Image: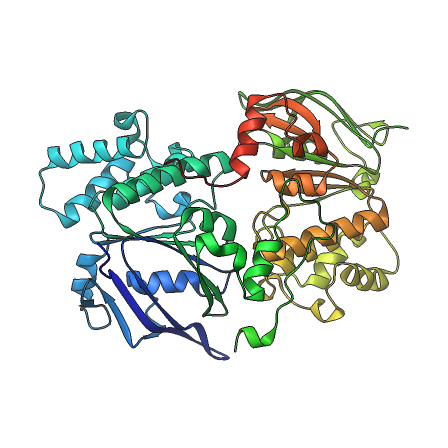
Amino acid sequence: MSDTLLDVDDLRVTFPTRTGAVQAVRGVSFSLGRERLGIVGESGSGKSQTGRAIMGLTPPQAQLSAKKLSFDGIDLLRASAGQRRALRGNRIAMILQDPKYSLDPVMTIGRQIVETLRAHEKVSRAEARERALAMLQAVQIREPARVFDLYPHEVSGGMGQRAMIAMMLIAGPELMIADEPTSALDVTVQLDVLNILDRLVAERGMGLIFISHDLRLVSSFCDRVLVMYAGKVVEQLKASELRDARHPYTRGLLNCMPRIGFERHPLPVLDRKPEWAA
Amino acid sequence: MTAAVAIEGLEVVFDRFRALKGVSLEVREGESYGLVGESGSGKSTLLRAIAGLAPVAGGAIAVNGKALGKRRDKAFYRDVQMVFQDPYGSLHPRQTVDRLLQEPLAIHGMADGEKRIERALDEVGLGNGFRFRYAHQLSGGQRQRVAIARALILEPSILLLDEPTSALDASVQAEVLNLLEEVRRRRKLTFLMVSHDLAVITHMCERLMVMQDGEAVETLTASQLIGHRVGADYTRNLLKASEGFVRTA
């Protein structure tokens, strides 16, 4: 099971703007097996664009380049739009931040899940419904039959996010990219959703890329953490060795959060050095 | 000493939904007071009710010893200012920072606007260079600084803070929290702050109230919370959740 699922070498994403090209991702390399990898950084560090590039959701005006970008032996750089579409949602799935915006508002939750399944597998209507209900149950929704017929605005944020996880897992992906999956949720709901995600990832032996700005949360959830700053990976470490982080940026990120029982006034702030971005 | 904010049995009803069910609260002068709870617990509604932005159905609110009626007078709006959660939504997209800061001054007929704007921007750590920019030209942290400057420019004594840092990155959050602490110390302000983040509240506030379903669960001091000396299971759950994800093997 130690085989490499995803291989990324020197990934670059560049956006042309009126004031010149902006490099959002500048040479990111990593490989992923069936493990949980965290990508951490502030807004604008390129963490989401890295996830989107793997998913094939880079906006058309942006330039994407890499020495290697392959998923299970498939060269994603040369794959046709059709091939990528077949992968997307089927073998690679993505959970987005806010269920309020990323679910279709005019379609019931059940229909959205069934649609995903039937886009990738030939199954009868009745069977698709059965499987969608089972999936809703798997993400710990208590009355799957009721929620199946609800619209996204009729459910809470935590429920919506569970529905999204259900939708993403129904086709049985091998790689899951979760982009800030719990940032829009309450702390207590956050833990429920993480527990569900954790269990399903472990049960199904998926690879997971967990993108977040919360270094503490990521390190408690993932096996390995990439820390990004200004489009580059500045440090890569095992989650268990977070306390030995060497890069001043990682240490700064760890230190700047208030913690219950550790009084520090004022809070230490990040002293950004230009050489970090070099 | 009169309380800065005293609330007795406050009821807020939206149509038929009771968002606040008889909440009482007292914030002392110069104190920093926190409200925590999950979404829907009524913590933001409480803040908005004080500011006059929620339909109050019953109970009494007094600010600096003066009972508030249905219509609040101009002095109230000068004395009590609010900072909202979303720095992207709370600044006018087509007004420059200068124009944004002039508006409250014009409403309250305050003199030497020029100097006040310069001072306000200085105080929140934005130089004069930001004065003629639009909100979209600023980062999230800079926008929140502008929102704080707009609140401070009228020299209020009470700031209502509705999740002022939850839309910001952790590193930017630290900067904004430091700024808020600093202006509070310098101007001896009273804070009433809402957050779902217990760590932020214990960092900023001396006392806090835990809310659930429109009701107060309990009132604690920050040190009680830090020492886990809490009475309600609900608070204990919140505390546990804020410690982060723990894998149950």
